[in-house]
Image (tube, rainbow, N blue to C red; front, top):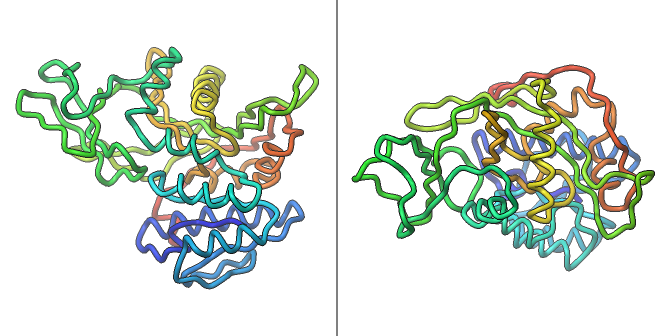
Length: 314
């Protein structure tokens, strides 16, 4: 089972377009690797896989996962923990463990954990904590829980700056906006230098970010060579392992003097739309190998691929 929230729960607009595109990539990839795929849907039907009509997404995740050999859920981070727990109770979970999902979803806890591991993260506080900013510092205000960029704003810190309830304030880092995509394996299996790696780097992706009073994600270029990709992958791998992530993970990074980790996404991200165009291996098969073992040491990336949100309507 592959369950994508926007398609299954009846979301609309850009969220549905992104969700449907990601679901299409995953369904086609698992099928190309020789597996059968079912997915819950509130209406949209894809060319690949078997659609199961639903008006209750959570219930469909529970029922379908109990009938399948393995399952993967893609949903907003603040909902993904509970949905993943449902899958864990019924079958093999091909995504991050529910506990890891909940850590990643909480931007404050996530940042604190990474900071304690010596990973570069921007200073982050919530309302009521001691101030760490100076007057005039550029500060990003974003929801403490969640993954959408629509409520993310950029401001100059002043005495009048208020951190809304349910938000975090984080120092803005000047640099190149990137993400690193990787697949993280199951570390319960014994490993040696001849066995599959714990983390498999896929691509580094340049994010098309428009920065004004609001910060918006508009698409990006997948499979870029920054000249510092290995440094980026190391930061992404350390972050994913510190948070206990497994399966596909996307790590948002600002590359400045060092890679600064901004967010860890414990699920397939929009970048898989481009990855599927330029990677010779099947993403679905890599996700399965992350759980069952035998991940390769590298993948074959053939080119760069650029896409915008507008491309998802085509």
